[in-house]
Image (cartoon, rainbow, N blue to C red):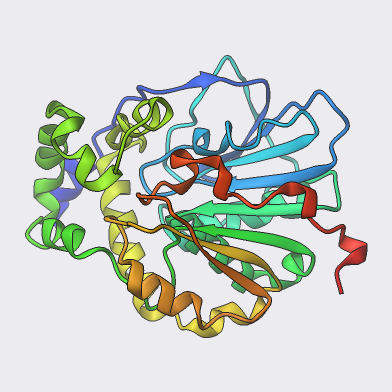
Length: 308
């Protein structure tokens, strides 16, 4: 990448979205991990991994139970979407050797969180879109951590799968130097101009979270690196990455205009028979924001000791 392009791309993007948060936030490398306070005794732990240009608030309303210990990743070089919390350093943090803003880097953040934070034996790791690839990469890096973990891969980026043709058509002519200019245009246009096409039917929560997508990262370079890395990761990663997954569910939307649904399904079908594939009736890439009904119940989450 040309130095002049890098200079344009590293100009900071201001944080414009945050929500009140009660809990602890740990800085881990160039990312963060937030642990929400729960009022009841924790019965299960859910770790959420957000998607490209999203933030951890994607999961907060889906897992509101007072007995759910909710742990939320902020991927590398993304803004942490919380108010009124002092960042803490984690004594369990170890340096990450991968390039930041890549699936591989964020998988290391996830594995450090999973190895050190859950206080229950019933653990679910739920990833949306790019977050699904982060989970798969994390399992590849440290399979032993996932022996007794349930995985939810929602509208996920998967090995050998593709972006939707609409997205590919938009991205192909964009050079590195054009990104800041393009994002300014997108941010100045009303989201209604493109929202219905890519996001499907809107509701209040979707509107709240998806209207700030292009200010989720700390700089434009992270956006470019995320996109290039997603495309490279899907191409070079083989479906044998599924071999270390024991328990979980693929949630596939009925309509997806961000990722290619057919190649997503083809890839998911290469996974072990212990993985369920649920073809939901969700009419967009954002299944959880369309309706929480598609998320498998936590009541069926097995205890570590009961999993064969």
